[in-house]
Amino acid sequence: MKILLCEDVRGLGWLGDVVEVSAGYARNYLLPQRLAKPAIEANLRAIAKEKARRAEQRITQHKRLEAAAAAVEGAEAVVAVKANEQGVLFGSVGAAEIAANLRQLGFEVADEVVQLPEHIKRVGTHSVTLKFADDLTAQVTVVVVAEGEDVTSLKPGSTPGTDGASEDVTSLQEPQSGNLPEREKKQSGRAP
Image 1 (cartoon, rainbow, N blue to C red):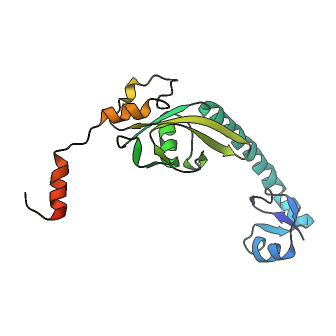
Image 2: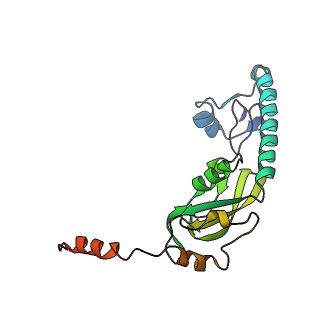
Image 3: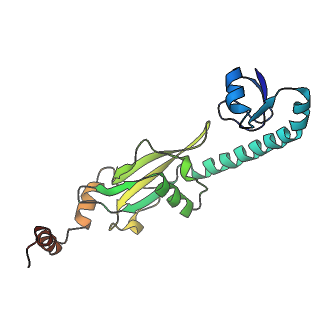
């Protein structure tokens, strides 16, 4: 069945495109959701101006995304989080934290753009892909440091943490041994 798309439908086409779909898909989903109309001449004329306007918007949006990808390519984001002596994080660093850090640095990055196979759970340097569009990606470096580490000592362009980060982290924060026995006493129910 030939139909005229009234909206952009992911994986099918853009507004104003005439596409061939199965009759059931058209009758049960596209037509009731008002995503499409029958492909007749009157509908084609009615949607022609909107099709041209949307095509112009897509071109403008793609150019804006290309500029954002070029600007952020190769950038370095430093995220400070709590970690133990072995460099394992208490929690994890996700896409939202990375995107927020890049926005603080002045880059135009949405949370959905950051592509992580899994959350970052260790201190160190990590390469992260930003996917602005299907054909438009950028690579950034994310340096995860322990919260007590001196972030101002990091030099721009350097990538600390690959070989000596775990050694630096262990020497920075020592656990407070005075608080540990009190916690154990409270858990056991004994009075001090």
